[in-house]
Image (cartoon, rainbow, N blue to C red; front, side, top):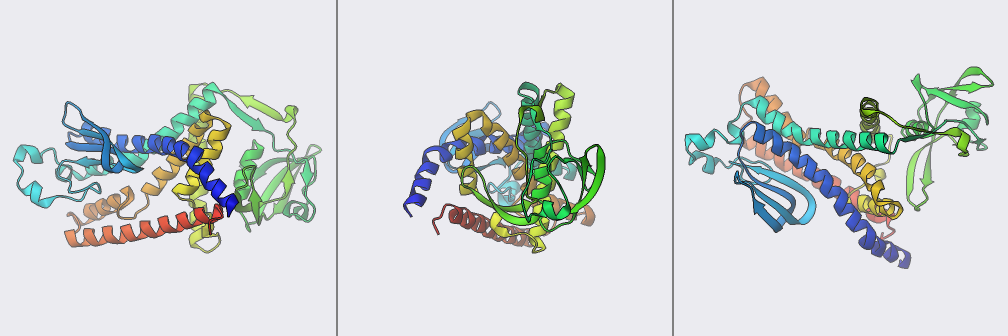
Length: 379
């Protein structure tokens, strides 16, 4: 229990400030996407808030938008003219009393495609932010590539059963070219229990081997435990096997897009396998877990928080596209019904959808927070 309390104190001292920095950057760009697209279509914006609750600091711009930094820094919102709340629920009574000129700048009165683009711009901005961070890193710092050379094969492991030997160079997995050891780890970690066709180069000869990663608990250098697929091979890093690649603008953007897609693909694979009962829901992480990781990353270097912000930005952008009312994807789902039916869903159906969406999000948040507290050994 004392160890757990030490972990909490460390989280408050370093993890919380690092988390607030990362989440503020990600949320700001998400809401900025909504804001800029709305302004482009002439939609009135009443307020732009980072956080919820009473404002700590606020000011108004020349177009009347109230910018706020609020007390509860776990999200944010853009409130359009004609909205009843931060969830963009229409204020029908207020809209009915507006002049025709005011109604022309109301979000709900805009064409369907404009409303859809405004909603999609938030997650889109998250993906753009992540790609920008990765691309700038690749241009300025470069990308360190460790060749996927097998140094050690652990006894009785999945790799040993597959016939992988020390000295083998992994060339591809399931037909997908593998250029680095980290890329191999990413594929394997998301594939427990799934047979993979691994192509290796052994003394100049290409061999195709069948390997099935085993689900194991892996502990990182910070003591975090995570279940993932493992082959049981070790790469002893030597200078001759490390290459630092620097990219020009277009090459960096291409690599950044590829890395972002890998994150999206891996996340979707995990969620699909979780829903199918093939993955453990205990791997879901909430704000407490993200704060813990933020503190651990910040203890290494402040600049390492930016790649973490990129990963979190992709996750938030992706989750917001899920077709769940309360999220941007839920709004897009409603717009899809509107496009097919030729009219919006009824107010009662929309309200019911938002209630269900809220219940789903609260349940997922509760599960993720419980997982975080268990990882901190508080339960």
